[in-house]
Length: 147
Image 1 (spheres, rainbow, N blue to C red):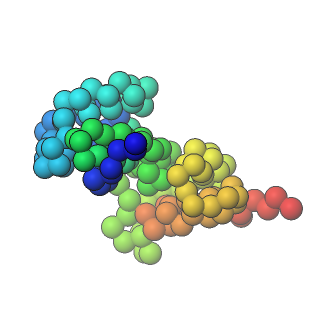
Image 2: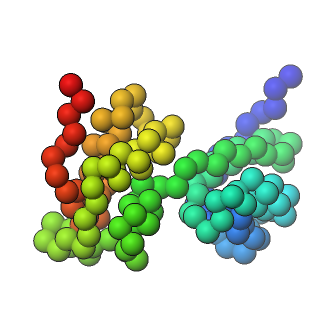
């Protein structure tokens, strides 16, 4: 018989750096989940991505056991890495802070494709470009047509 799902918890944690302090501890502790067990498993799975912010979806069951899925880093964080920014623009419509190329946008889109709700790489590239625009990052050149 399958376990009964009690709920989901979504967190963003740096890879290989989960510890029982907030936000991890209170989020898991309030649901009765073993915090140290989660931290050990998460850190073991994400050692290769140390330092990168990773979204994680934790499914916890009525018997206090849990499973979790680690997703790819958010597009905004990948754009900040590529453009070497600390943060996006405070006024993205007026003040542009960086530039990226369509090739860089394509790399991010291919990396994030599994977590996006689109089927074609061109759609994913448009989504990444939209995120860049909302952060005050301009995308250089014209959209590459694959006709």
